[in-house]
Image (cartoon, rainbow over all chains, first blue to last red; front, side, top):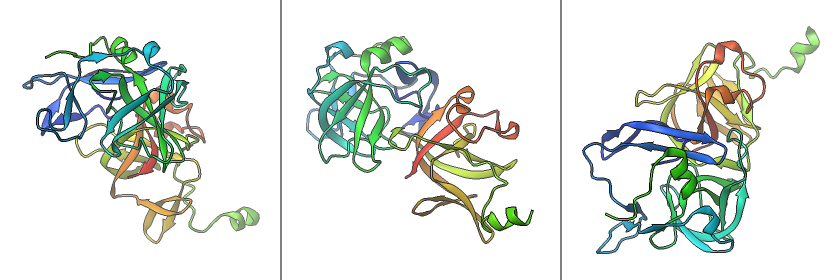
Length: 167
Length: 124
């Protein structure tokens, strides 16, 4: 799963992952691919080493947009800016370059911390093992930026998929 | 005629369509890796090397295209950023073909239509 605005060509460990569909309008910016030959698991890459779940965390739950609280401290992983955390400062962002955009996108901020950059899209947003959404974009001066994400329930409803929360 | 010629920068590349967008304080956080910047039909395209279809490049407001000797350079307000013919990695996101016209100025000429756009937010 990744963001709808990402390229439709995706691979994992050198194997092409067939494109299945995407939604890029309104409250949606998501895309998914199947993974033939792989076993899909309830793992989210977090870039953090530990002995039991090296560089990933187990996803054991999800929290819909309506249940995500303003000023909550949430974390994320992005391929470019890596792991980081910030406060949920808005649930009503409308990124202007999404067709017929609705103000349902979420914004994380932390003073002086660059939370998102080009290349981070599709990364997971979470507290602990709870899936909150996937990285959509950045907002700021292009140097120290806030992170925008699509809430997990919109990702699921847009694609007709369910985020795994058990193995 | 003389006045028009006098006002034109000698290194301008005004014959090439160079669409710009205004999303400079927000951007989709996607990435297009190692795409070759190609000039075709006086339009600029980003051609991925993994066989995917090409994108029309949509540039941030304030960027422009200039000739530098035999090269065509995409320039940011702070200097050269990319040269036509070279592979670049750009941040931003893919835009549906039927939506591109709403994002950029000047209007998309007929010769440049028919492909999705890539909204460039920066060169990585």
